[in-house]
Every structure is written in structure tokens, then in C-alpha cells.
Amino acid sequence: MITEIALSNASRSGAITNMTLAEYTAAGIESNQHVVSVAQHKTAHCYGPAKICLSATHFAWLRCYISVFRKDVCHEDSGSVFLKKMEWESMSSEQVYVQKIQAMSECVSRWIKAYRKESARRGLEKMDSDFSKLITPQQIADFEKSSIAVEAIKLIGVGMENRLSQITLFEYVSVRDFVITEIALNNACRSGANANMTLAEFTSARIVGDQHVVSVAQHKTAHCYGPAKICLSATHCAWLQSYVSVFRPVVCQKDGGKVFLSWHGESMSSGQVSRAVQSAWIKAGNEGDINCTLICKTAVSAVHGKLPQLKTGLADLMCHREQTAAKSYRLFQREVTAADASVQLSGVLRDGVSEPSASAVVSDSTQSPLLPPTQQNSAANSDHVSPSVLSRKEQAIFSENDVAFLTTVFKNTIRSGPMNQDTIRNTLEKSTTGSSLLQKFSIHQIISRLKYERRKTVVYFGRNTR
Image (tube, rainbow, N blue to C red; front, side, top):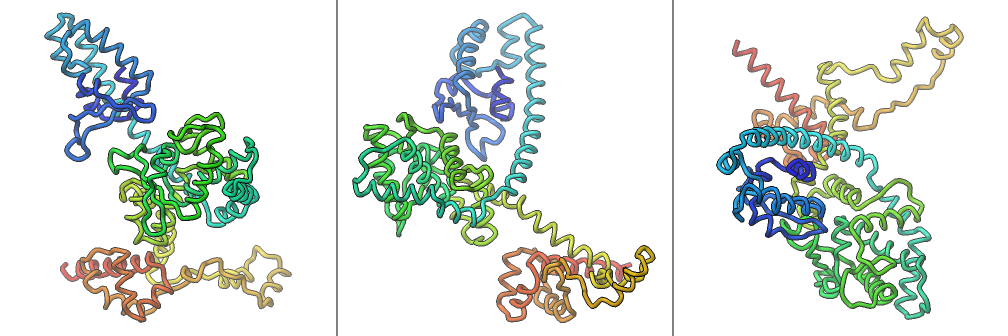
């Protein structure tokens, strides 16, 4: 029983061993899971009660264990669910059971540590592979201009004019999937927020500026951040209103319940919402898999890379911590920083001696003994120079004036100050020379140069003190 709970939650062993009968009986139900809040665990002072989620099967197994096996050795209706070693010793003289339970407890602790490491590694691998599948602006434009999107908009317009005599399965699914996809693309919310949005929550939406804000109470991180906020523009709100008033009554006549329903009138799960988005995406002619998680990662990468000042607002919209998004974006940014570091490393190792250019390689190759004489002559007489494959910023080299300007402006930073991208960028933007450097070099190249100047200073003072 302990092993099954550990494998399903990847929680610390203390959260399982400290779970009490009172906490078990007070478990709440969320997304078909029985959630047990364990107050006593290692990081309770930082994150509050630990959440142990039990499926219907695991919950039934645990109820059987408590009512049959645990009750056989302890008739009290309080205390820990899983009895510790000393509790078993005071209730039973069978020392063999005590040793087995202690050995199993230690074994489960090792399993949890190993599983957590493997889970983290797999999560990072999945995140890295997803960054090669991020949605592009062109794909979004293709989706919104596709025939399936145009047809859905036409159906919504005809429905608003009450000119639809009969709605088919294809028409209902097309409109529903299109509206869900548009909401997901404009909010980057988890699929559970769309799946759990109710008619009462939609009709009680508040108007903030030009947006209709729907507060969805039931979602994954509701216990941390409260209701999720789904923001609808005037157009999207009109589309959703048309779906609710015209298309939804075809499958369900009730005035309550969830907004998005299947063709059979049943509430959609979060997985069905993701499949609806993927279905609309593929019908529009876009290749590759898409889901709400991939939309979230695309939004995080776009905002952190292009509009870093909106990081806090995006975290509020997506109902997660800003540190979570920063961790995700950091993995994506490593490719850019690694490429820039490789370019700068070449200059640092050679200490100002530049690498041979593409034209120099071609010139030297004209005298190579590996080439036939006819090719040597043609290469020597040719005026063609192969174009460089390096970008303009990668070809740029810091001049003496550039280095003098940087060492003067960032004198204190080179000595001991922190090198923050935003601080350095803001400092350079205050002057014309600094702005031109930002156009000529990337911020990563400038920081690498400052770090190089710092190392030179350290080496210089280190030699003088000897």
C-alpha cells in the first residue's frame, strides 16, 4: 500500500508515514482524485500541508487496509494510518512483523529518492524536446486563416442570426473545438481551466478594460492561487456566447453544468480539451502535435524573450509561480547562451588572435597539394570569395574604443559588482555609444567581455602580489 502511494505521488516518505486517520477521513475530491492534506512533513513551514492524491482504486485499497488489517492490531480510531515500529511493538509480540515493517519502510524511502531523481530527469528531457516543437506565429496565423476556422466563424455568425435550422455533429464539434483553441491560444491556460468552466462562471464574468474576465474556481493550482482567470476579448466573448446559446442546447438543455460538452452532453475532461485543440490544429493543416501544455511553454518563451516586463502578469494569468516559468525558460535560453559563449570562448583562448576567415581558408587551399593542378590554377585565378556563414553579430570584434568605453562605464561592475542583463542593458541605453554597442553585439557577448575584463584584472593583481 505504501509503495503504491509513493509511486503515484513521488512524495517524501515523511508525508506518508505522518498521515493520520483524521486527515484520511477528511480527504476532499478534486478531478476524480481523493486529496489528503498531511500537515506534518519536512517542508510544511514553507509550503503548508503536503497533498497526497489517491485514485478511486488506491483510496479503496487504503480503506480496506484501515478497516481490516490495521484494525486487527489497533482498535483506536486515531493516530497514524501506517503504524510505526514502536507502536507495533507495544501491540504485538511478534518481532518478525516489526522487522519486516521497518525493512519495508527503509526500502520505500530509497525507492522514493530514486524515483524522484528519475522523474526530474525525465521531466527535463521532455521540456528540452518540447522546445523544438514550440508553436510559431506563422502556424497561429495559418490556423486562424484556415478553411476550418473560417467555416466555424461563419457558423457562429449564422447561429447568432438564428438562421440555423439543424446543427450536425460536424458543425457542433467544429465550432466547439475552434472556440476552445482560440481561448487556449489567447490565455495559455491549462486545459483543466477550460474543461471546468461552468455556465454560472461565464455568465458572471466581470469586465476589466476591454476584456471579459471569467473566474474558474476548479483547476489544478486553485489551492495556491485561487480561481483561474480566463480573459476574453469582445469578439471571443461573442463567439463563446453564440456557442452557449445556440450550439450547446443541441446536446444539453440544462441551464447549469460545464460550458464545453461532448456530443453526448457529458462534461469534457482536461484530456478531451487537449484533444479538441489538437483536432482543430490538424484540421487547419498544421503539422505536429499540440496541446495546452505546449501552448503554455510557447507563451513563456515568447514573453521572457521579447517582453520580460510581462513575466509577472503572465504568471498570474497562467496560475503558476514566476520561478517555475523562469526555470522552464532557462532551459530554452541555454542554447542561445551556449552558442554565444562558444563564439566568445574562441576569442578568449586566442587572446585577440582571430581565427582564419573563410576567404583565408580558400586562399590557402589554392596551394594545397591535395588539389589537382587544374583546380589549383582555377582557384588562384578566381575572384570569387565564399560568403561567411557567420552572422553580423558573430563576426563583430570589440575594438579598443569599445573596450575602453565598457571598462569606464562598468568599472565598479568589473571589480566586484553583479552582472545582471537588465541592469547592463539599461545602463548602455542611457548613452548613444552604449546603444550602438547593443546594436552591434548581443547582451550575452557584452557580459562575456565584461567577465573577461574581470578575469584580466584578477590575474593582473594576482601577479603583482607575488
